[in-house]
Image (cartoon, rainbow, N blue to C red; front, side, top):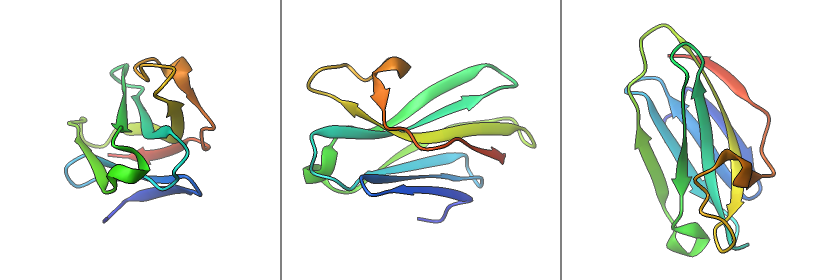
Length: 105
């Protein structure tokens, strides 16, 4: 993965690629949790989750393509969600998050 900024935890990895506004997320732990990148674009108020719901056994990388205005800031973090208990569509379902990274588009 070619990333502008990368977040790595023992249970997964997330990154943002400025060229094309892509997020990538992997699930690197066989723990029953989904891994996701939770992102926010403060200037527009847009926010979302790029979720790897295939899990560890599904392997691979989940890619999410976004379209942010140029020369603005986004914030994102890596987190986990128990998909057997939650839909993982609400930010409150996500736990064990990393620190937040702020990058320019």
